[in-house]
Amino acid sequence: MKNVVVPQIKPQLIRKKVVVKTTPTVKVVALPQERKVIKLQDLPKALSPHIYPAPQPVRPVVVQPKNLKRQQSSGVKKKPHVQYRTYDPMPASPARVKAIQATGRGKILVIVANGPSIVEAPLDRLSNVLKVEIMSINAPDPRIWPTTYWTFFDLSQIRRHEKIWDNYDGYIFNSTSIKKQKEKSMQFRNEGGHGWSRDLVQNIYIGRSSVYGAMQIAQWMQFAHIYIFGVDMNPAGIDGKLHFYGTNPDVDPNIRAQRFAAESQYYEKAAEVLTDEERVKYTFCSLGINPWPFMQKYNACEHVKAVDVIIQHAAELNIDQ
Image 1: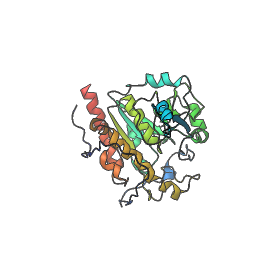
Image 2: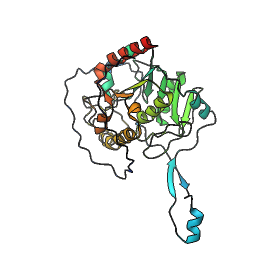
Image 3: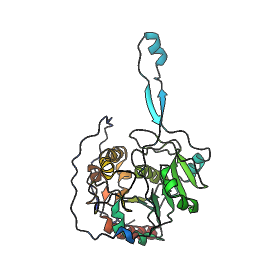
Image 4: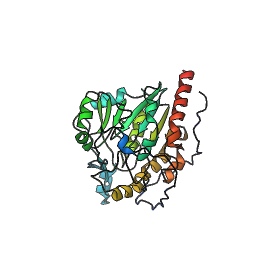
């Protein structure tokens, strides 16, 4: 395959595993840019506001030390390790999750999150592009709906998009908190804390971001490359907006903006876990907008130019195969 014209960033991979107990303070610098902003009211009014996915309810699981009997006999007491995870998926899910493994080989996945920058990207040009599949995160963008995949991990998404959910027949990826399921729905057991799952039949790490879980799904499906739109994470937003559809009435924008620092740590930890070969398969299409340090550890390109890059990449995949 020919080299893809994507701005390459030489990653600095840290191989040392670190237990992060506190969130480091990160200085946020909003990068001023001149851009043509498409008015949100010009978009179809097909979507209702959605609530930002809240952390999933988790249950404590006590893991006893292997040498517990020896400790008890010697009088030495050691606290058991406590893990947090959601409940097990419904019986049909594990087989469905297993069935999609490696189904993305030789194709590109485009993940579309809800940052305001997606309004400026001509995503509609990606519809029906050979070798390109699209995954919607939370509130779908009507310009590209319906997409092949839809990922959300909070029950509020069904409540707010019930009509869309009723008429959708694609693949849906949920946590076990979503009890309402369809024929192509799949549930994942969410492990608490920082981590990265390579076996989605067992679990997934959603962290504080649905996109973070979607990245693990993309790896499980073994897509050749993954382009991610809408992970802006910029407290300043674009034209004062944090979401492409406008203002979320259920979450104060100031509180939402404060979550970005903790959210960025999951992408930092993933950069430590992924190999160089795995990490270069992810391109964040929010260069110059997302201000967090983890962006330096992945491929990145400008959102307004990314569609052309993806179409060229797909054409080269078609030639090679």
